[in-house]
Image (cartoon, rainbow, N blue to C red; front, top):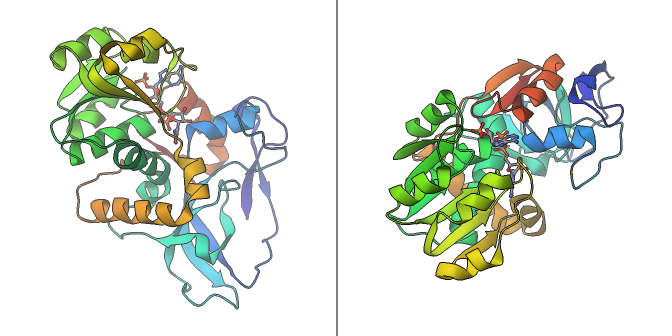
Length: 322
Ligand SMILES: NC(=O)c1ccc[n+]([C@@H]2O[C@H](COP(=O)([O-])OP(=O)(O)OC[C@H]3O[C@@H](n4cnc5c(N)ncnc54)[C@H](OP(=O)(O)O)[C@@H]3O)[C@@H](O)[C@H]2O)c1
């Protein structure tokens, strides 16, 4: 089998692919021939040693994979050879073959391609957790989504529209905005040329009800001011830096700031997360949510994939194909 390896923390172009013997199979494991590995923004941070959780090198990055079971351990009763499964492995996902605990595998709707199946989970579960568990929304509310052509932002657009929200999508390029438009955003804001805060306020008749912010930095800070009375700013991510949100702007108009950390919550609440996953899969199954078909790279080009993502060259999601 082949594995992408980060031998030491540093630039993503230092990743290498190593040939390895197959890992041993324990009684409750399955062996998966991987067909697509999901790539997430944070994996680039992990490789550089810049993520909040420091993973000692050497390690294989990658949290999400999809493939077919080629072998089952003696204690496994509910999985079979040939079955297509998704696994959230936490780490070690950029591989051509994986040994995974059977109870960490999930069967997914056949309607999803391997690429979609390997890349939707983190983005959609974050969005669904944020918009159904961290806040309660009502149809017709107006939501500004920042980074709306990236993985997390695009999923939020899709989920917002499915919940009946009026979604304004801010993104820097035509192709990113086009993906948001395909998912039903009612207004598109060019974040590279327009004043996103002013435009959102104008669209929202003086202020929006929700700001969904996976970007942060200066843009996030400004967009707190796009909220109207009792509006809520959802803190999702910091690709452009941690925003410094002025408390006076939270006080004014009775605004709220709500933190969202899906991954940690899911680890601490596995049963509740299973329910969340089931809800998202049902909505995908009946065609109300539409995970994007990712841009793909060969496993050998993991470094290029992570660089393209970090440097904002990718619209939607990214997958590695072993
Ligand atoms: N809270 C949670 O539970 C949770 C879960 C998953 C991920 N996240 C976080 O969400 C964030 C976004 O993840 P993602 O998967 O959507 O990433 P992504 O696919 O790379 O998208 C991020 C988008 O942010 C925009 N952006 C603006 N300034 C940027 C900058 N300086 N560097 C890079 N991108 C910039 C880019 O859009 P434009 O070019 O249009 O500006 C890009 O498309 C990450 O910080 C991630 O850690 C949080």
